[in-house]
Structures are given as C-alpha cells and as structure tokens.
Image 1: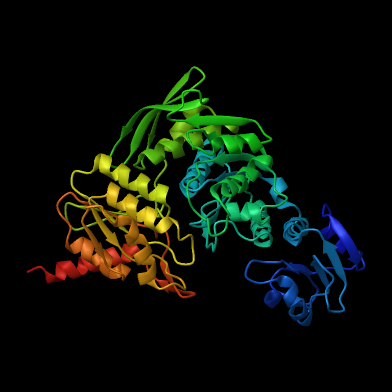
Image 2: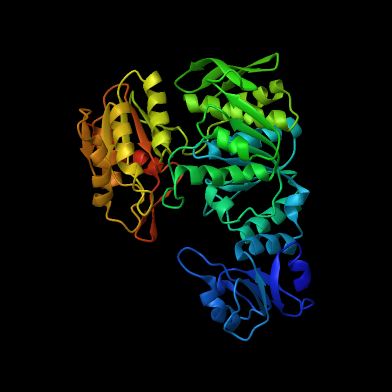
Length: 486
C-alpha cells in the first residue's frame, strides 16, 4: 500500500518521504519491525518509541511516523499525535474493517464483560447474525474463542482483529471499551453504532488524575456513537450525558424518570427476576445470574437492544436463555452444603456489590477472600478492606497479583481498613493456602466469595505470570479432603 493511502485522514505536520513509496506493513514495536514496514513511534508512559527508531530501521523499517524529526537518516512523516496516527493508519491498512460491521461499545468500571457477553447473545438470538466479541475474558469470532491480553487491544491489533471478523462474516462486534483505550486512542477512527455506560466507581487512579478525569475519559465514547444507553442511577451519568453528541436512552432502578426502569425486583440465589418498564410497555425479565448488579446489566442490555431496534419482548427472551460468564459470580462445585463463588470483583464498588448480593440470599455466613493488585491504585486498598469487613461475616485477606510489590506490604495497606471493625478476620498471604483454609474452616450454608481473580488463570509475581486457576485449586483441595476421610 502506498504511504499516501495509509496517511488518509491523518493530520500531518511535516513530510520528508515519498508519498508514493510502497509500505509492506505497520509496526509500533521496534522488535517486531520487518523489512518494508512503516514504523510508528509512540511516546509511551514507560518508554518512548522515538528512542527505538534506530532499532526499527535496523530491522528493515523503510519510513517512520513520529512526532519529532528522527536522528536517523530515514524517510519520515511528522504528525501531531502518533497514537491517533497508529489507529488511523492501521484502519486504512486493513481496509477500514470497522465500517463493514456495526460496533457496540460498552464502557464503565463494573459489568462490562458480562454486558458484552449478554449483548452478543441477544444479537445472535434476535438477528441470527455472526457476532464478534472483544473483551477482558476473551475475544470471539462467532463461537470461536481467541486469547486476549488486555481489555482493549492496541489499535493495530484491534484493526487486524476487526478485519478477521469482517472476513469471517461478522455483521456486529460487541466490545469492552476501557478508559485507557479511549485516552490512548486505541479505538481512534471507530464509529460505534451504540455505546453503553454501566457505572463508574473508583479504579485506575494510578492512570487518571481524579475520578472526574476518569469519567471524562469514559464520556469520550459517547462522542463517537450514533446512539447511547446510560445508567442514570450512577453519580457520573450526568457528566457522560453532558458530553454526549448522540441520542441517549436512559435506564435505572432508583430513578423513575428514566426511559427504561426496573421494578418488582426479586433476587434469588442463582438468578434475578424483575419487570422492565418503558413507555407503556411492561416486560417480565429473568436472568440466571444472581445479584442486584445483574438487574442493572440486564437493563443495560435491553437498552442497547431498543437502540438497535429490537422489541423488549425479544430482548427479554434472549436474556432468559443466557448463561453466566466465567469469573463473574461463578459457582464452583463443592463437597458439602456450602457454596464457593469466583468473582472478578477487584474494585471497592464491585466487592461491595457481590458481598451485599450474597448477604441477601445467604442462609449461613458470607466469607470474603480477597487481595489487591500490586503496581495499581493504592488508595482503594484500605477502602476495600473496610468494605469487606462491613459487608462480610468473615474476612480472609490474601494476595491478588502482587506484581513488583511485596505481597505483605499490599496486605498491610488493606488491613488498615479493617481496623476498629469487629468482623472476624485472618491474613494468609499465599492465595492457595488461603483458599484451602477457607474450605477447611467452612460452616454449613456458608457462601465463600473468592474475589479479585475471576476469569484469570494466572498470578503475576514480579513481571512473570504463574499458572493459577482457582477452579483447579478448589477441585484439587476437595480431592485431598476426600482422600483424608476414613
């Protein structure tokens, strides 16, 4: 492809290259640059891609897109924003694949993964179309599962995935849209058919300067949508709607002025049931995922369905046949009359939601086992400790993904929030040992919530991923308990 074609739609500051030169591919990591590539130098947070232009040239790059004149003798194009340029050149290179499909974007702190899976299922049921999915748990092309490294891939990888989805016949793509991806232009150049805002609670304050900054990042999605759906029970909904440039359909449980309202809510141990009300239409809804947050997720999915032109009856019928999502209030089989749940809750609000939801249906104790991630927002650690102590009947503080921090130092930050609260508690740094201890010391009818890891099948210590699947840990320990029985 000619360089000029790759640069279509990009704000160029200076050109010192033949715009008719042929480009073989695009790279943004100098280690992956190949002969004939256009290398896009991105100024990152940990490193600056401009420092690796020499390496990219050695590996065969024939031209550079950058934000300042390179030191090397190499054809270059200076742009105002190289992150945005990477997104747009990638879209051009792969033939603007997002324009061949309808893209639904889901943003918010909690509920993104479950909502995207439910929306995918709803579209498949209502339209019998092949649907792609981009998310935290996995990427999917129809029912084919692909691995994923982050919630929203880098723009080049995302556009490459979009092309594969379009080539395989996907008519829709449902994707999680993180605040990082909006701030870092990973979703640049994408026009979304519908955007969904679930909620906003404390998270990623190691990346954003404040909660308002975090909210503004989320709100960007609704300047790139044809239509939107917003949960107005959330405190930051007004900011999202204020920034929106598309028609918004509002939904809520607490606010009757919403266009879609959930009423007559019944919370069951394994499901939720409620009535969805919208402009003289009442539809009874059942979703086989427990917790009040599941009502919000279901309302958000219905709101997206309405914006896509589906009837509430068809949306409700799809939700009735939907199944749970790995790592989201996932029930793990046990050997007795107690329950083990795995949930991805790793923010204060998510932890509070899952614990209070279990308290509403528990016949015995609710036991909270959790930790906090290292190299991430430290301010939420004591907050989560306090929430666990107030919402659970027993608290076990352990490790999550310590990364490059000392696990005991992270735990010490969490324990500050438990001070002065009489809820029984125990600290067990090793997560495997903590899970085993929780199972060995359970009481009848207990609900043991393993919070924080969810779908993850690894633990990050230092910068290395070690295999750790909580489902396997529970199963293996139950086998040991069986072998010890006379």
